[in-house]
Length: 328
Ligand code: MTE
Image (cartoon, rainbow, N blue to C red; front, side):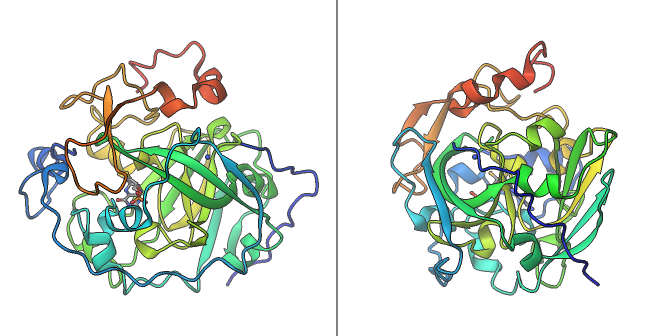
């Protein structure tokens, strides 16, 4: 049973401006499973991938504003952004999500809203999106594995949605959970992570105007492998904070447990702000491999990683007084 969604508040304005060197091996070392372990993803020779069906143009999704928040940098070609992915529910290889997600059904979809808010319940996606103007925002995306892309997302500020449910004063964090559908997500058979995938943000991070709830990319609906029908994009944080195929949002008082932080707390912090000064225990974070037509080229296009992925001016104040080496 879905409920009717609180209406979009007219007062909500759109603010202009969203290596793995073998993660599988460390997970195995940690006793967390991971079946086939070979080389790390970045050094994997990519097998040819069938080009996935191109999703519908988001023609019905009127775009109200377009903003370049990547300083004019060239966009990553669509085939790279949709065939070089991390979505472990469909496998751990970079091409697995495109290959293995065709059985996943992003419609019909509902979103459960729970926790410390005046309005909670289960809501149909159509109602969540009704009356919600969409924006295109071009953001840099930096994966913790030290590769990066520039992607034009279609979505709207997460704050617009959260405000509609009127979080109470006890809401200090927002916890997100991905859909848990073993029949449609073959990767769930491997206990690589403590499924379902979970992520979280502090409430002020969630309410920041750069934080985007995304329904499309490159002018089209999100392909399954990129997190259809609804995903998070937080451009100043490592990509693993960008949880895909969100089924549940909960307002919590305590810092929520997150899938990667539970799996390897010494490697993947709750904050996960992009920070070239804090190395991953097994690799440097000072540079990144910008994927732009070179696809799976390990050494090409090395560029310097920027603090907060280049969004420091907008977000550094959120962490004033915090030791970001400790709260990484
Ligand atoms: N969300 C879910 N549910 N499962 C995942 O495995 N991987 C994360 C994030 N969201 C992941 C996820 C990681 S590690 C990254 S880098 C980004 O998705 C990748 O997004 P992309 O494939 O669209 O580039």
